[in-house]
Length: 433
Image 1 (spheres, rainbow, N blue to C red):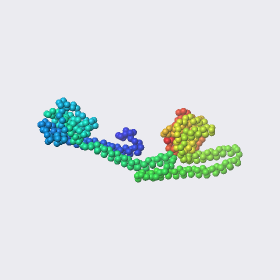
Image 2 (cartoon, rainbow, N blue to C red):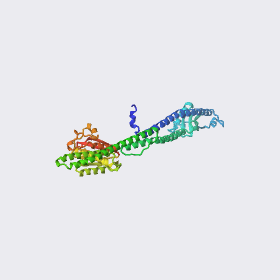
Image 3 (cartoon, rainbow, N blue to C red):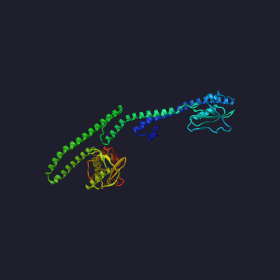
Image 4 (cartoon, rainbow, N blue to C red):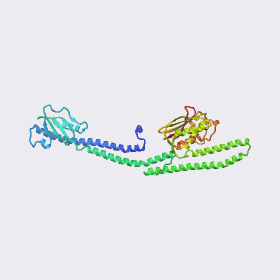
């Protein structure tokens, strides 16, 4: 946990972290090699060459002081120019470019080894001018810069930079190819979590292929379980419709007083079967398509108002479309509205569409649900008799469960809370875009 504070500065994606793992060591290696080379090679070479040149300058100065002249003068042999200066013409300070770091070593070595050293001028990479105070007067000694500095020192850095970038690009391309199967697997898993079926074929390294095959096996098992559940409940509902029809025909022959309560029971059984079928098909019904959620919720509220439900659309913001199963979302919102008006006197609906999420909120003024019971309330066939007013109507405990399944099928969630406006239950369907 010593480096825990670094987590918030690190990339969150696998691609970014892999790139950091790849690039950071290369950059650090380049810096270390550069620093070590500059300190131990360039400095050492420059110091040795400056020492040799200082000895040659000392020899030239000694020849000038002794009055030696002619073609055999050491300055001619060593290709060093000598110019006498007037008294007081020596420079008062050294001259060099601010980024010429090897010039510092040259100056220090000249000052240390050259008698009478007065200053040095390093105007460019071609010439060096050394000023000395000799017995023969002030002298200016000029020679080629390459005699005290290594030739083309930038070649090493240019080669390191070029090949470092080249190898980094090659490694980056290879890394991208290795991460591409993982990204495809992540997209397929995310789409399946949102209720969409994206074609996927395992590729890449052995471990990625193993994870891909495991995902395909899991997706196939889940699809088989959903299909089996749907077929089972559909079959049960279909098989029960025939005896229910016979019961209706038999009850029609009874007297009115005896027939009414029995027909009520048959209607209740029919409603239960319809609720079971709705629970099975809601989350996976229809194909995902671009839908304007604001317009969809507005039409749902208008339909509920025509049916006599006391519901109002109080807030709708945002523009754009979201990939939704419109039939499933409609049934989930209708179930939440039905619960709201069943256990309360009125319901209010709001829609908020942002760049990142869609939120559909239904609020009522009923008794609400205690916080400790909200998780249980979203389970199938669960009715909280102590939390909701059962005198206003009865259900099979599938309204919140259907809304939860629809939200999860779209990669979202159903959140329950307390309404600040009305004081009852607040149900939010939140779906990421």
